Amino acid sequence: MTVGDLIKAYRLENGISMDEFAARSGISKSYISMLEKNENPRTKLPITPTTKTLSAVAQAMHISVAALMEQLHEDRDAAILDMLPVDETVAIPVVGMVRAGYGGLALECDLGTETVGKRTLAGYHKQDFFYLVVKGDSMEPRLFEGDLVLVRRQSSVDSGSYAVVTIDEEEGVVKIVEYDKDSISLISQNHNYPPRVFRGEDVERIRVIGKVIESKSKFN
Image 1 (cartoon, helix red, strand yellow):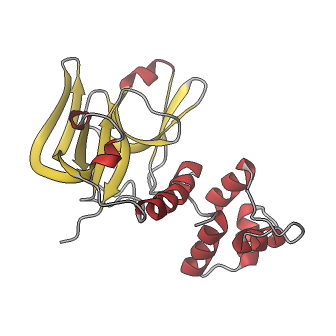
Image 2 (tube, rainbow, N blue to C red):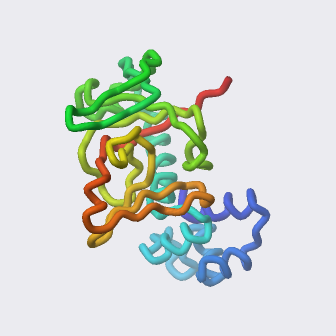
């Protein structure tokens, strides 16, 4: 799937014309048409959008650039996996709560296990991973309450990553973590929840527990 495919799917799903998407994004209608066709009319070659274009598209779709890139990568990875042999699986513990204190990381509320393909672990030990049950609606429409997120334990993540973090050593939450020169922002996908920005000494209140690797939806 290309950026143009995502734009077209978003427009159709939300009943938005190309003119309206152009107004929202600040991208010309003609270039949006080129993106959706994924062809430069002069060279007849596929289009490679700039970072500025990706940022404008993400803003028009009310998502972060990281989320936009994740959708593109997921579709690419899915196509690759379709050509691979069936993966071996391992059992990873599912927890309902994560806490971090000076004594280390505590995984609370044992909810059994969930299987994951060994390829997903990418050479790490299975002890480095756990599944966490999502609570609340702050990450909708990306993550819903009851979904499972696979988390790899690590104390830092790249800016724009989905991560489990604790605030003041309280229960861990799933957020998009973005870094600035002297601040850390915890961003929700649900726009009813404004970003929480921590500056100066308050940055020390945040502790990264691990990076979210993938999510699974559970249906009753």
